[in-house]
Length: 94
Image 1 (spheres, rainbow, N blue to C red):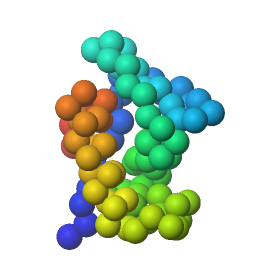
Image 2: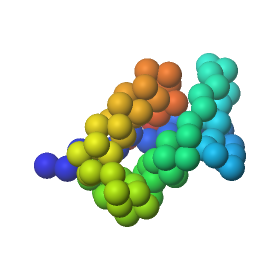
Image 3: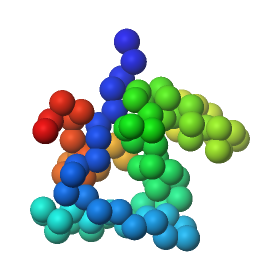
């Protein structure tokens, strides 16, 4: 069964930068910087991708020299950190 992705928290504002992006939660006042891969991953959150597998495949299309399993590990780690910081939430949380 495909793994559903979390969604961006509605209180998060993101600003793309030349080498990544900055995420800011207007609710918790948390700032979070990501590199270019993290910014791409953020852009691929729902509705752009609906499953973890879809997101990882899209990242690998941009970075074909990186093994898919490494991308998956890094994406899961980043998603867990974003969740801890309150920047993403479960898809059923409203």
